Amino acid sequence: MKALVLLCCFVASLLLPGQAEEAEDVSEEAPLRDRSHIEKTLMLNEDKPTDDFSVVLQRLRKIYHSSIKPLEQSYKYNELRQHEITDGEITSKPMVLFLGPWSVGKSTMINYLLGLENTRYQLYTGAEPTTSEFTVLMHGPKLKTIEGIVMAADSARSFSPLEKFGQNFLEKLIGIEVPHKLLERVTFVDTPGIIENRKQQERGYPFNDVCQWFIDRADLIFVVFDPTKLDVGLELEMLFRQLKGRESQIRIILNKADNLAMQMLMRVYGALFWSLAPLINVTEPPRVYVSSFWPYDYKPDTHWDLFLREEISLLEDLNQVIENRLENKIAFIRQHAIRVRIHALLVDRYLQTYKDKMTFFSDGELVFKDIVEDPDKFYIFKTILAKTNVSKFDLPNREAYKDFFGINPISSFKLLSQQCSYMGGCFLDKIERAITQELPSLLGSLGLGKNPGALNCDKTGCGETPKNRYKKP
Image 1 (tube, rainbow, N blue to C red):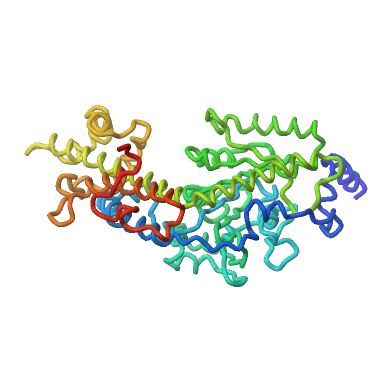
Image 2 (image 1 turned 90 degrees about the vertical axis):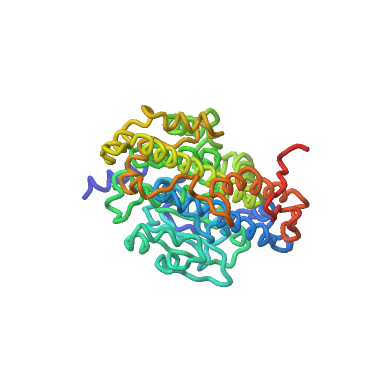
């Protein structure tokens, strides 16, 4: 027993300054810090009317359903990318996703940004792993908790596709409606912390797949660390592999920075970059914010002015995402349309090659197996690059089509030239028009006074031949 006490004392002596106190009751901590910079930067006290984007969203939904979805369904794009766009997703608010190891301050940061500490709305926090659910914080007229099963069953929300991850996951999904002004414009998602010695199979649901679902839909991704949890294990490596291609949405947060002296903080900052450099292989690394995101005053004798400026910079970043939410939504739908178009062109090329190689005496299965196993031998991808305006950097992985055609026989598809009707036109022409004219026109119309509710067909291009506002006269 005496040896155990001595061991505890030794571990406590190794804690960074302020860590031992952090485990005590927060009521004994420093007084609450001023929140005026949050309210000012995010404009929470302004009594301006909520922007009405219903006209633009209605137009965006119409473009998707009439010009993109027919080709998407005809060539079963969802079975390749597992990303089905719903009306709820098109009309949803910007999503801010919080990721990172356990007990780095993700839930505390959300409480701080929303001012929920010491209220009945606050998320539970602690030194041990406390968040075991995916928690979605949304706006509502009163405090209300929504079970994951209900969220998935409600087609009006953007979370109905989560039902595919099974009942075990839905039991770990919870929605909380809070009457807060910031949540009128954004949705926060708190995630379970990554524990390196726990594999995703132990969670009872596909944790990495669920994270990927949220990553694909997030407008801003906060990856939070604290100075004592900078080691990168297999689980964190997997997370950063899932973030590939989303570097522009990632923000790294070094939290609890006021627990360190400045010299030690500089060393920890360098160690964080050293740990993450192999995982984020881009020319311009994500922005790193160094501060302490919780409601209490900074520790004495720390560079609180630096931490405050960093915090304001992060809030400005968040506000920029909120202000550009409609532009981001249109750009996202256009990017999705480009991927659907490329997929349709590839399936069409596979099918055309198959028809060209088939003879009366050929074995269809062997012919197509030869094509799928070595598409370069039949110039599948090179033909797409040569005959269309597709970028080679946008082409999907060749291996993905082995699995795709393993589930979907090539005989179940039609050539693009056969996907036309007298009244409806051709699927390919419609998606081309959406990519090159309709969506850019809708995006350009947002700059006309920033009053989407007043837009008419002359400005949004509701007609069959919309104006391309990106094209110089």
